[in-house]
Image 1: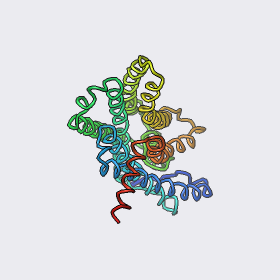
Image 2: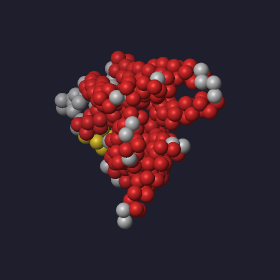
Image 3: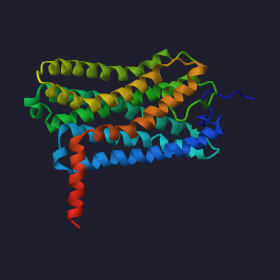
Image 4: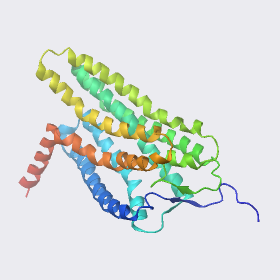
Length: 307
């Protein structure tokens, strides 16, 4: 019989947490709830930023784009994962895996860059307050967001092609719950060190964020009043929290050692930055944000007054 080549199979088996059926049942309920909250929270941020004139600022323009990214990111992963958790068929086609990888990698890369862009916005707001509206004019904001999408998906297309031309030697059992770079590279039967360069897209925005916040800290320390310093730090606090959650978990997932003892830890880390973080982001930006709370009150008051 003629031996099959390495790409003769038509799809992958997503092992996920199939060795723990009881955990799958719990995960299905928990992730469904988290997904619903993520949809509601991020949709609310987008709607408020659109309908309230006082939120028509660069900061909330970037925030609404971040919420849209989070909506797309979780939707590219969670529904398929929920289907796998609720049934016995845990397969995904070869083409479907490629599309999922390309979309998720593109959205994740775009979010990395957008968070760096948002750090520049905070730098302009704190360090150049008198020229803020001139520097961050709408055309520049739209250009930076568009560039983030273009770079994110250009990198994604390149990385997806490089990964799917690797010889897999007939292996099609993916020890993960969706098509992601690290578990796919483990299936290859050749050296994949060159394919791991996509992690660079994480570090370039990190360098931009570190530069922006080093300048912000220098500017804040020059403010003599404690109230002024606290207000400046509060302006950046939400963004720093989101950056820490997203980058901390993503960098850990991509740089962790590929040992058997860490494989489940890697899955839970991926769950964190693909599902938990997008759900938490709206809460971070609203719980201590007077502008958003005021927008909610104005929208609700306008709605009740119109009845």
